[in-house]
Length: 213
Image (cartoon, rainbow, N blue to C red; front, side, top):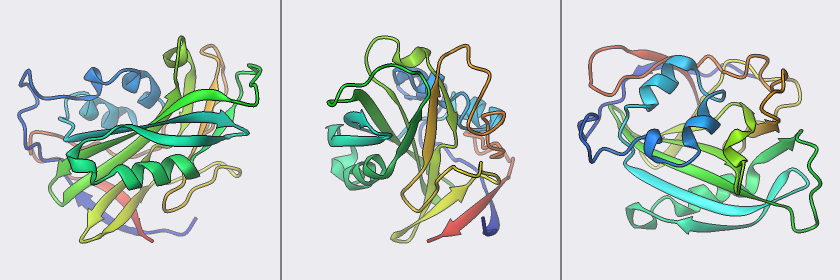
């Protein structure tokens, strides 16, 4: 994977994270479990207190490692990011190692797009998980899709390493789903080394590899 340019930035909260009205991944069903192994540990801790500006959800069915019949079931921010969420859902690759029999209709899956305000403007992050009973009990690995909006263009934040068969693109990422007791993961340790961001504007600059595509 070609190297992008390096840039530092810090999440700046428009809402006070400690406010009872500030929504974070703690308030989004299955988000904490699904994100645990697809972002770095430091970034995960920051997300736990980072206020989410917008939350868009696409629902579809997992058929042959892709999401079929995708449709927006939750829209916020006037629908501004619905198209992006749908595009990510259509391109998402899901490697299912749970060995659960899938009928022709597939297994229900939810693809989330979270929107944050940061120092440079807007950051978006996408992740997915199986819907229905037990969906948050599976082990998810890979690297979440992340990007910063520069003008009218999304600049993707790339993990520094990928497995040989992991697909990645401007609107494409790969996740693996395994039983909770699995010792494997798509990323080796399951956590791409994306550096931490803070929400209080307190001064820790995180270094990221960004690609303008």
